[in-house]
Amino acid sequence: MDGCLFCKIVCGEIPSAKVFEDEVSYAFRDINPQAPVHILIVPKKHIDSCAVLDGADEALVGRIFTNIAKIAKDEGLDKGFRVISNSGDDAGQTVHHLHFHILAGKNMGEGLVP
Ligand code: AMP
Ligand code: ZN
Image 1 (cartoon, rainbow, N blue to C red):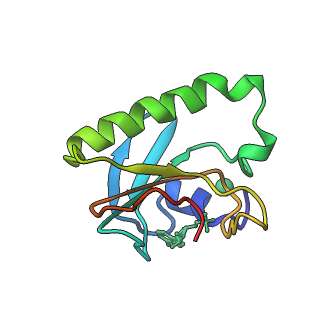
Image 2 (image 1 turned 90 degrees about the horizontal axis):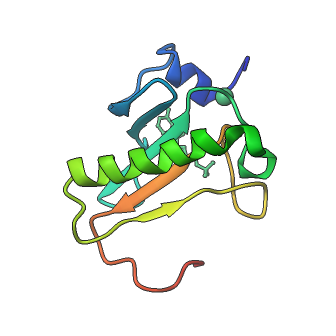
């Protein structure tokens, strides 16, 4: 989608620190990490957020979660990791291309919302 930051990252127009790629998804390191390990995984096709997912995207989202498991294994995240997807203003979504944050490398405790 024109003007979308993560579409530009997926096509290589904007550089990123790639972690993983397959036909449908791309993972890269967050530019402003909020944990010692902070990776983003995005679908290669533009989807605004979780809020607009429908049945046609079920296989894609399933694949992304399988890829998250692979990335966690490759990164050695055996002590655990957290997956977050912000959708909409109240959640603090700043980039309107569906993405999943993979956070790890410190004990994040039990609370989900600061
Ligand atoms: P969200 O606030 O959930 O929409 O997350 C967007 C994330 O994208 C933030 O954690 C940003 O630090 C990250 N981000 C923004 N620009 C870039 C970039 N050029 N490369 C990597 N991560 C980025
Ligand atoms: Zn996009």
